Amino acid sequence: MTQGKNKKLGKKKGQKKTIDPLARKEWFELTAPVPFSAGGFGYTCINKSAGTVVATEAIKGRVVEASLADLQGQSDQMAWRKVKLIIDDVEGTRCRTSFYGLDSTKDKIFGMIKKRQTLIETQVEARSQDGYILRIFVIAFTKSIKNQQRKTTYAQRSQIKDIRKKIVEIVLKEVSKKSITQLLNFFNQETLAKEIGKATRAIFPLQNITLRKVKLVKRPKVDAQKLREFYDDSQRSKTSQVRRKGQAEDQTALNLIKQGEIDKEQAQVQQE
Image 1 (cartoon, rainbow, N blue to C red):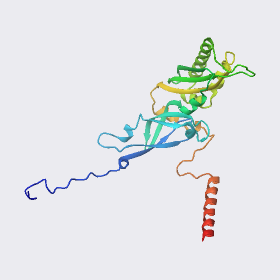
Image 2: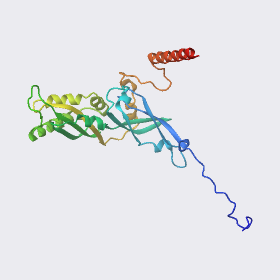
Image 3: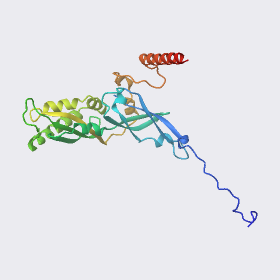
Image 4: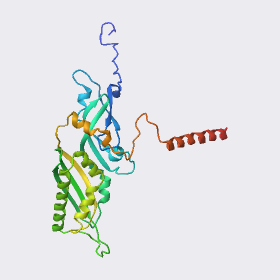
């Protein structure tokens, strides 16, 4: 059959164009609320506005997760604490977030679990002063007393019950008299663990008392005024400063970089 009579013959199949998926993405900077000292802590992307779908509206409600060490600007402290934040508002290319929950890394929890001790876990549902309903999970482990001969440190059922009762009382008391911003400071400073340890010392000595998880069950409507309170820089922690894009680096780091460049030049000269 000749090519002229067969319409299908001689037609080349069209190759699909390779389109970079990131080419149609729009990037937004994530900002953390008070009391976290870091203003911007990362970026997130979403498809650009097309048709009736607006990018700034579609990104609202997205939950992001970050390490507490990154939010506080401390690389070696509380890196095991994970903070969940939800995007509530967008200004230009900056996303304003608010608190959505706390969690712990698995390696931190697994590192505390050992033989010959009792694990005590308690969950409490409490309401904060400003209307946030939180489900709080506290974990603790029994410990041996000084000069103890017995290898095991198992607590009796009645003692576990009394310890849980004490933990519930302390958590309800502290959460009910604090706002969500004050609670974040309270949780991050591990003050709750110290209070529980003092209150339960007479029942059974405890160790590794940790706020394992905080789940946000219900929150009040976040309006513009509430968001302004969350982003009041006068209340932001100034214990550590995180360098943002465009700011100068630490002078010590600059000196080290300069010295490295000088050493590299000297090594090249010696080789020649």
